[in-house]
Length: 435
Image (tube, rainbow, N blue to C red; front, side, top):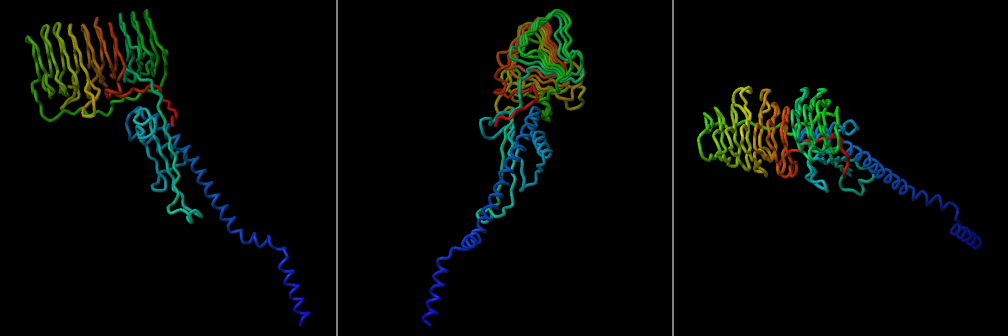
């Protein structure tokens, strides 16, 4: 028995000191942990790959939306971003995938910039091994901000086919030092220089070509660009419907003597017609609806002033009756648009109903001087400066019309427009990533 005990003890001691097979045992114990770590690493890798893919989607969608932002329509901007994301394989299906478009951006250094668009894309992943550690399904997000390359235009002719959509006729001296002149006309003579013209401007952009006849002196900082893409009408969605009651059913006509004070109201019938000699005509702040007629300031030496005013040319009956504005005779005109969030038409001095018939909607003839701060919008009619007038602006003047013609002396400034609420006429459709 003793010998047997000794042999057992010897075998037990040998077993205790035997190291063979320990690696297999250790591996067997560690293998589940290693496999789990590898699986978790693969899962995290999938998230990182999703992040990179999502960032590419957000970048492309932001650029597409920024290009569309020149129209100023948030629905179209969102549609452009969504369509571009879909082309890149990202289909919006909340809550699994979402695409948020902010115009203008809500955060970051470009917050509030109307030339920029912010896009945030998210994708929710179904958790695998990570479910052991996470209470909620992991969501990957990517944010991108793109900005439209904008050279602002202060003159835009909207007519798509007209020759001489922007014309400089006879002796014209036009000084637009910070302004781009643009036209949507595809005509080979969309912009015409006829006679003796002196033009100073930033640049000229046209969908068509330029006809240069006569002796002209052009000082253009960035030259002439032809065969461009059409430019978006920034005011295409204005509602010009007047209130239901005519405050002046037969309009307002005054050809007497002495000063005149006009009040914001709805002028039907014959609109507003001021005549006489050497009269001071003051417009109180507000919106002046001119229904089925014109707003005319004529006579000799009359002076029209108004701060915070908008003139709306519209109709309640037939679009053919929509009138225009005629500042004729030796008159002085100084008008400034309303500003601020409470204004019905911020930044707008003249707004014409887009249903107006073709014709001349804004005429400045033989004026001593005119100072208009704000935008003139006549989408279906021509804006004409005729005679030896000096059109001088001390701040922001923008003209968006069917056609524009300059004759005589005109000096327009183009500064401080965004602060007034004047919308940007975007020149240059490309966009770039800024965040």
